[in-house]
Every structure is written in structure tokens, then in C-alpha cells.
Length: 202
Image (cartoon, rainbow, N blue to C red; front, side, top):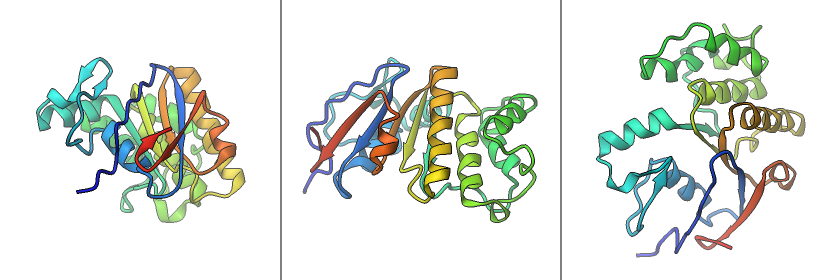
């Protein structure tokens, strides 16, 4: 059986903003899924997130760690179509049993959606949908934000807005960010750029 990831040895410092680039099929998304505790590696020695070796956790413990410590931004947004942007953004807080007043409005304002927050995703532009998805990912102030091609469906103007938001939350909340991108322009915003090929970080 072929391995998607091969001998990956990666350290991401707290508060670092990393971009990962490489050709399609090289293992970038699989690596992100491992870092996000959505995929369990078969032969890894350790997977330490925020000081905890997550390979030693039970499935419920990994789910709790993912919910409490990690935010996700996807290329296809993954917003719930039946909920308004505001309700989508509130989901993370509700899952953790946290109050939704105050911080939700603050984050909605920071991503520039105050006038559109009542709309459902179908009535938002592509750029607005991605900003709503970013707000949903950061509203709980996760220590680690994982972004899989977050500008892949956006034009250059909206892509620049998304990267500016990442830089803002990275700087303001000392948020650690790992972003997969095919855009060299977007990658230049990161503190460090890593290249992947054939399942390995080069």
C-alpha cells in the first residue's frame, strides 16, 4: 500500500503563519487533515498539538481537542445553507456551550459582514461566503487555524481580503496558521513557506 505522507517531520511554532505549496496530489490536504485531527496517521511516532500528543488520545478526546483548539477554513466554505451567516458563525460557540453575545458581533464586524449577517449563504457573494466561513472558524479564538486553499475559488481582490484577514487575526490574537495554497502571492504573506512533493516536505 502506498503512503500519502512519507517521513514528514514538521514543527510549527506557536504564533507562526506557515504556507504549504506543492503540486496537486502531493499530500498537502492529507497533511492538513492529520494536523487537524480529522485523519489518524498509520505509522506516525507522535502528533503534538498545543503540548498534547494527540495520538495517545481516545476518539472522543481527539474530537474535543479539535473542537476546542483548532479552526478550519475550506476552499468550498462548508456553510450550512439553511442558516444565516450569523447562525453559521455562532455554531462553534454553541457546540462548546459558550455564550454567543458580544464576540459574534465583534467578529462579524471584523470580517466586514455587519450588513449581510442576516442573509443565508445563497444570498451572499463568493467573497462574503468565505469571510463568513473565516468568522465561523475564528470566533472561538482557536490556537491553531488550518486553511485548505482558502482563496482557490476567489478572484484576486477577494483573495487579498482573505489574506488580510488571516494576517489580522494572526497578529491580533497570536493565532498559529497553517495554510495550503497554490498562490505564490498569498504564500508571500506567511512567515515561512514550505514545499511538498510526493508526500514529503522538501
